[in-house]
Length: 262
Length: 219
Image (tube, rainbow over all chains, first blue to last red; front, side):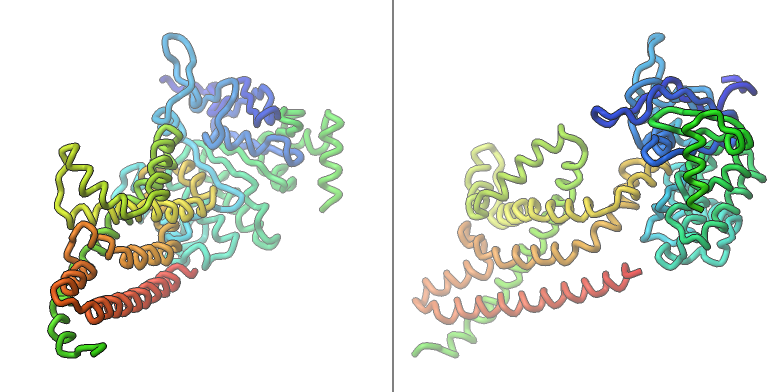
């Protein structure tokens, strides 16, 4: 496929997700350019986490197509028709995506270093030495060069989350998903994790999609902010516009409630 | 005379060699139980097409007496062209019977793993086999080792059932001695004592293993 500067890195094309009778994502259309940083905000239950989980293939979609880097993720084209993709296709395409979770989800029986070596060895076929070098470099990048031999339980929440970021980066994804990555942290540990994300944004041309309640961070870091309400994008735009002159009354209400709580 | 010490010393060597057979049956049976149990547990998790027949098999085996299964393997399978000696038949029956119990233990262990571990494995694009081998089982198995150990002792205590198909383990050997001399007191008592000693020793060993695992995983 030919590289196209205008081609989005990720595109949700009329994507719908239901849990039983409940529609959590309603015909979502959203395109994210290569290198773009998009923050998803909104009340809980508005579907923003589901947007990330569908892209990571942790949730099956019930309608529409998700595209990654110019090819369909959730479907394959067969005889001119789009049919749901099989496991092999999902595995190949989702290799371009990395994800960091609210609760870290580190492997507790492995050291920080080993957490970052497992997938590069098992999936990318790196040798032990190569994987170890890559893992050590990434752990140094997130400021944990002295913690490589520690197990997750021996690390603080902020340190665990930084290991989780390094672990995802070890797979060299093109798209990084951050799902409320500071929500489970004590307030004094939030900064160290956000600093790592800032550094990533400054030094790498990664496409980033983040669900966050840190409005200050979203405003400063994101190229675009999308406000979700009941499974739809109520309003999206540059952070300055969303945070200072939101068009929608719901956005205004949400921001007022969130900012009052601080 | 209620207890004949001369007779006791006379039969003890033969009973000790029979005890070796009992231990062999136990260990071989348990290896089958532990490995097949894990296979059954994993098969049950790989979708309804595999889970349904496996669940039926587990229920049937768990809901019928072990003695019937021993007879089935030894006497009925030959009608279908599968002829095996009594020792192998006994080991197989014990192993399959306890595999169904072990599979439930493994299943509980696997289900105890947080969903986030599976999701992280998907996000890192690990294959299903790697996820089980490197992520899920190393976390799921250590906590269930004590429960598996209990089944090892339970299996051990059921080995006398193999006397029904004349495997020369402890019980069968004692029965033969009794029928030859018409003295059952000494051989049966000795067999009971040998079982008691071996049970206590293996229970103690299991506790040691448990403590080692706890130390290793208490982080």
